[in-house]
Image (cartoon, rainbow, N blue to C red; front, side, top):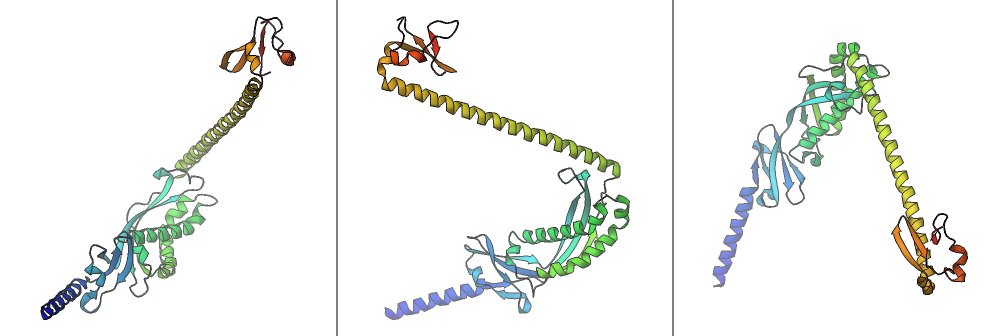
Length: 300
């Protein structure tokens, strides 16, 4: 019996080893790089570079309920629509108030230097977003001379290809920092450069929006001020009510001579028909108001 269990255990171990070995061998296609994602943490935990024949050993692939293996191209081609804001029109969202440059950007991952595995999260979308951000920042920097202090549309249109050539060269070093190589960045469609008339219209529109926003802000400030004043008045009124409550609580005999006429706006105390009014201790505070003998405002 012992020999049976021993042989059975060895057989199970051989099966497990065969399963791990078989399921851990991954074939990575030519021109691609592999990555392992931890499904529990939703993050990339390892970059897998192909070995001889394009094969790689990935032990985590043996646990598909915990890990996911996927491939992503080493060289990528992305189409971007770069929107550059014009001076004083930064807050306007409409495309026609922006310089719009459709770009075809070709870049690749340097398999020897690339190490930021987090950028492969979301099947490399973060990597594409990084490239877009780098290209846009470089474009804005290079085009600034044509936008400030005066928008020079004609000069920018004539120099657009030169601007792109310049940023392609400048971006090489920035891409290398991230383990990337910029292959090319070319215009893939019609470039939209707002003319002077549209730009001037946008300036007026932006000015009008700022004035309206300022008016709204002032209105909100005024409303908050009124609310604060009302809050203070309510607190003062509540304090007076507490004082009246304490007086009546400490002198319950007062209730023999007065009754509450209303509880709104002000609390009015109506004197009894007794000509003596309240007890002598309150006599000076209960003089009737003009026009309504026998009625006083206790809060005053």
